[in-house]
View 1 (tube, helix red, strand yellow):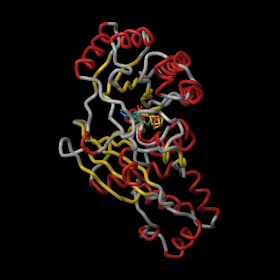
View 2 (spheres, rainbow, N blue to C red; view 1 turned 180 degrees about the vertical axis):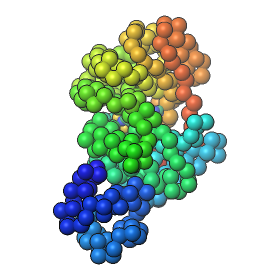
View 3 (tube, protein in one colour; view 1 turned 30 degrees about the vertical axis):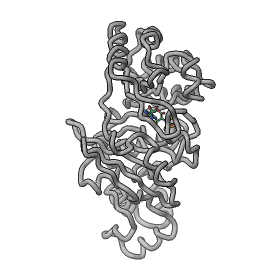
View 4 (cartoon, rainbow, N blue to C red; view 1 turned 90 degrees about the vertical axis):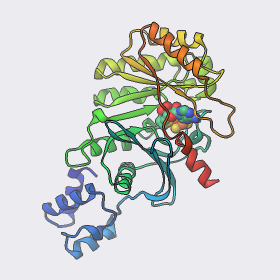
Length: 334
Ligand code: SAH
Ligand code: SF4
């Protein structure tokens, strides 16, 4: 809840306004039960317990990478559903990758989450709970958030927006929008909606192909929103927000990694305020996709750069711990 909503609820129960402030402060400290709200009289706590619940993410499994200390969590929610989050350490601090849905409707062929289908949306508090749980387990403060775990954030638009406002609020975890990235497979109508919010977050677009023929084969969403329609929305987004767009491009051996693909991609992105992240695809069981060879990544990246598109080959973290989205949940629930 936003503070204004919480205040309305608490005062409607007949309690004074300062009680709402206390409850709000406790919730933002990441407590897990009403009994921990020690400055609230027992009678109030009991009353609150009857009406409300506090979302928690319960640690089910934790894997730590031997290579780079990346930590992958499997959490269960109040109804027993399972989601994943990953914490990565960078020189500038800790970054968390959180889930926004249980499963996903979008069915991308290279994605472990997509294989499992869609179960439900996460509430804003379940998104916050992943951060609280990781912070208290590792005894650290998270400074960056990426919405790149399980699920399609723009398919859960209202809850994601609520989460963004809550997590960036001064009285909340206070993680500024500039430290948040939201990744989408390209839900064009929602990109226009998001542009209007004019948030200072980084929008990442999972592009993964330079043309409709290849993209429609791996990403069904492309049939509804083809590349040109998507890139038009991206241009609108950069114009209205002034923010650079980040394009994710998973390099799949023999599928989208040729020099011709690179040249085609460069011509599509020409003149746009953007950056391309090239990522060797993570192989997922039940798909034949393999990572592109190193020389392909280098050649692809060079072509983009020569044609004036900034691009980098992304370092992969947590390769030994199934850190790609949906992989751990898939194994655990099989
Ligand atoms: N649904 C959103 C965000 C979650 S997926 C989206 O698709 O953008 C987060 C990122 O992981 C996306 O860029 C997605 O394309 C990528 N991804 C999924 N499976 C992958 C795999 N096997 N290898 C590399 N990247 C993958
Ligand atoms: Fe969903 Fe993103 Fe996976 Fe596609 S890549 S199935 S949109 S989570």
